[in-house]
Length: 328
Image 1 (cartoon, rainbow, N blue to C red):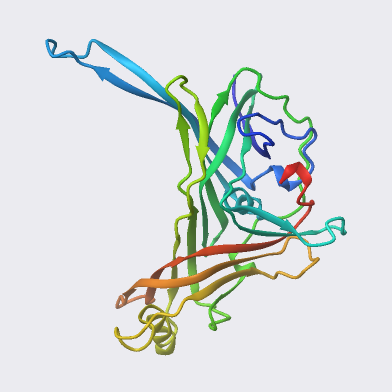
Image 2: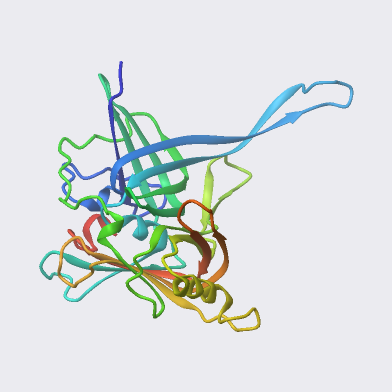
């Protein structure tokens, strides 16, 4: 057999660990993280060697708790990945308004449980579901000559390999195209129209974990944990000395090391306009720039790279479907 093409579907669970199947047919982007998906999944058993004092080698291997894990790589064409990691989704009133529908996504202490349904198509399809999923981290990466990409790391309560779901017969997603860096505008505080950025990336992560009881190998509960700082970096070329000074002052807070740092919002805007389809705006709030490195080669362009940490994010998305679709 030869597996030639795959699909990954994500759908919110009403009860943690109770699997839900993808919609058949799947007709909206709210069950697909993005384009060109690649995924991996696995199952971890905690094992221990039992090594008696009288023997030079273990007499047995003992097995203990188990949990599922996965990673999905994708190209962004919507903001659903942010909903999965951040967990709080509100719709603009009236919810029954005409498409596109405005989603406001913010970070919540309560994560969203979901089922990840993975399919590899071949002469006999390979179907797998990770049940009771929670997102541990989401990356966002944009560079000069490639579409914006990301990866979602997940942990799960269980893994279902035994004909876990009936695959959708039709997958017709919304016509949103891949996000491209040049379609966005960028601002850092009062600094706008920043056309010298060449690379921008950040990661949203939370310390979510599963709990195991003595009486069972599978997880019995989940701990939502807390969000870590949103950490990222920005790279750019330097067209003139005023730009160089501008970047250095973002890190210093002024013109010397003796000045206070003022938090600034980083805004990544895909032409967001209410009621305009496929637009989005990502705001990383209260960013502090903690370091920078400057490289001045003698025969090519000068570059700066500076890292930042932000407290939280807000994402506005003009989605093809309502918030209530698929239970989000």
